[in-house]
Length: 480
Image (cartoon, rainbow, N blue to C red; front, top):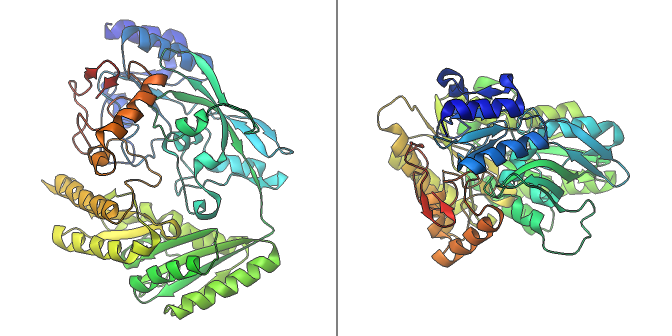
């Protein structure tokens, strides 16, 4: 299909003002939060499920790949467009369609910003638990695609634990509902299969999500340690005691330096690491749990304990953690974030290996991560303008991922596979495993036109970018 006819067809569906196709305008949509880039033929901004369906149906008729996009905060290259594709940006679809406080659920559109949902239902004493660090910008649709987590997933789980049902536009443009509002219906758990499928099975146009009551009491603790080894040992000790905090987040010396340089929240810059630990529940439970956490941290060498129970004081402690990635810009022009998972008992071993990778590569690595569930986020600091830095950084990231897998961990905890990790999938999965996953994808998207080139090995990987010849049909049901 000629580009002029394609653009005209898209404009008839969504309106002339909601199709971007000039090369200069497309530059803003080449990126997500990863190091990758790729340019679509056009970016469209639908305002309804019907418009999404019509755009996808047009693309299907013409054999054009489709790439869904939320806020562009993803960190694995999942929203990077294949050249020649249509990118569907869902940010106009941001309404809260229904709040059922009695049944503790909400029906929302995919472009709704994560934090806006909790803010909206707060007067009813409710909130939405999944809280990625980018929750002030990231969208519910993107969270569903990547099965996003966040600091509080230690106790409350990741996105899949809070999604009840989805309205989905499939590859041919058909509209279907999967799941049910009350999670009591019979049949296969198609929602469980769809959450985390990274846009390769279809596009979410509505989500029914679970809401939780706000806890009676919350206490946020900061434990300051001279060394990161001590902080890592404290994580295992707290969890091993039988306590399950709401969150356990760790920041190392370099991360603290970045936060204090950029924002000045009063974190102790002479510390080797800090742990942010939050407990919630009824007041008596919180008081007892906080006292126990303090004692356990001091037993592992904590030199200082700070506590905050007032909302403003807790928000200040969390602001440093939530803003840590952005603060890294005070230390280097770029960072490459590795999203590996390890058993908690292996934190010490893998963090030491991260230090070795830093020394061997010559790149500083800042560690800021979800310590309670072993979800590491080593951030490799570099300058992409320096010749040869990007491939060396990607190689260092690969070494860290291999170290995670070697101790029984996984390639991703919440950011997805996307382009970033697909070359490493054979470390965890056999060819038979991958073929089984492909068969599931084909059941939803037989032609493989939905977000092609992601997750499965083949074609360009992280840092190589998409080029015109990068999306090719490998077999009857697979595009790479």
